[in-house]
Amino acid sequence: MKTVLITLGDSNGLGPELVCRHFLEGASPVDGRYLLIGPETALTWHVARLGGGRFWERLAAPQQAASRDAGVYLYVPERLEGMAVLPGVENVSGGLAAGLSLDVACDLLMGRLAGAIVTGPLSKLALNRAGFAFPGHTEFLAERAGVGPEGVCMHLCGPRLRVSLATTHPPLRQVPDLITRERILTCLRLTHGFVTALGLKTPIAVCGVNPHAGEGGLLGREEIEVVEPAMAEARGEGIDAVGPLPADTVFFRAAAGEFSAVLAMYHDQGLGPLKLLHFHECVNVTLGLPFIRTSVGHGTGFGLVGTGKADLGSFRAAVELARTLLAAG
Ligand SMILES: NC(=O)C1=CN([C@@H]2O[C@H](COP(=O)(O)OP(=O)(O)OC[C@H]3O[C@@H](n4cnc5c(N)ncnc54)[C@H](O)[C@@H]3O)[C@@H](O)[C@H]2O)C=CC1
Ligand SMILES: NCC(=O)COP(=O)(O)O
Image (tube, rainbow, N blue to C red; front, side, top):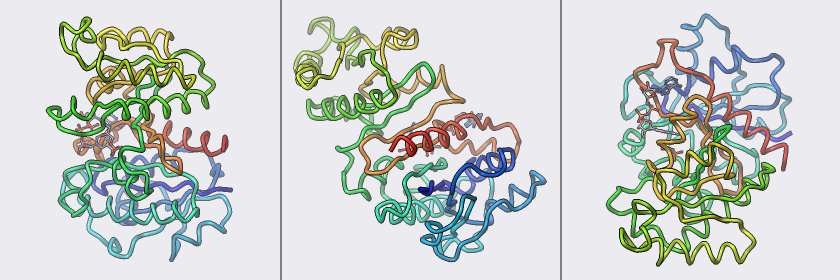
C-alpha cells in the first residue's frame, strides 16, 4: 500500500478545513493510508469548530507512515509545532507552514516513501514572503523533483473539459517569449500520455496565441513560426494534435466532447473557461513529475475559512484522482 501525502497548504487558508471535513464527513474505515503534513493547531481549530473528534494519529517521524496500516496520520514539521493559526488571515506564518510542509513531502516522495501528494492551497505571496522563492507548488515540486519547470506541464481537469497550460505563472508580458517549440512539444507529449492513461482517444486541441489564431499571419506570427512546427513534430510522434485553433471557440468544442484536452498558451486563457465550467470539481495535476501530484483547482479562499460555505468538491476530486492514478501504477 502506497502512502498518499496531504499537505495542509497555507495553515490559515481553506486547506486545513477541507481536510477536516473530508475525513470527518467521509466513509469510515478510511480507504487507504494518508499522511497529513502541517501544523496540528490548524486541524484542532477546525475540528473544534466542526464539533468533530480527532481523526488522525500523530507520528514522531514522517517515515513511520510507510509501515502503518490504512488510516490517517499526521506529521508536524519541527518548526510548525504549536504554531499560532489565524484562520482567514493571509500572513507569513501561513506561507511558512505551506513551504516547510512541502519540503518534508518532497523528501518523502523522492525517497519513495510515498507515492502521491495532494496539496492544500497556498498563497503564493505568503509563500514567497516566508522565503520560498517559487511562484507556486508546480515550480517548487518540479525543482525538488529534479525535472525543473521545463519538464512539467500544469493540467487542470474536470468531467468535460481538460486543459494543459504551455506556460504557468509568468507575467503576461513574458508569455510570447516563453512559448517555444520545445515547450509546446513537452506539453503535448505529457498531455498525450495523461489522456491516453485516462482512456481518451479524441485529439488534443492546441490554442493559438493571438486572436483568431493569428488569422494566417495577419494578427500575429507565433502560430506559423512556433506552434505549427511543434505540432508537426508531435504528429510525427503519433500524437493526434489539432490546431492551432482560435481560443475563443475551442473550449466550447472541447466541452462538447470533440477533444480529449486543450493545450492553452497561458494561465488565464485556459483556466477561465475551465473554472467557469468546473470550479467545484476540477483537479490540478502536475504532469511530468516522478510522482503523482494533484491539488484543488481553487486557491486559499481566505474569506471563506470557517464560514462553512466552502465547497468540498474539488478537494474530494483531487484525493480521488490521486488514488486512481496510484492504483493505475
Ligand atoms: N493550488 C494552489 O495552491 C492555488 C493557490 N492559489 C492562490 O490562492 C490565493 C487566493 O487566490 P484567489 O485568486 O482569490 O482564488 P480563490 O480560488 O482562493 O478564490 C476565488 C473565489 O472563489 C471562492 N472560493 C475559493 N475556494 C472555494 C470553495 N472551495 N468553495 C466555494 N468558493 C470558493 C473564493 O471565496 C473567491 O470568491 C492566491 O494567493 C493564489 O495565488 C490559487 C489557485 C491555486
Ligand atoms: N491557478 C492554478 C494555480 O495557481 C496552481 O498553482 P500551483 O500552486 O499548483 O502551482
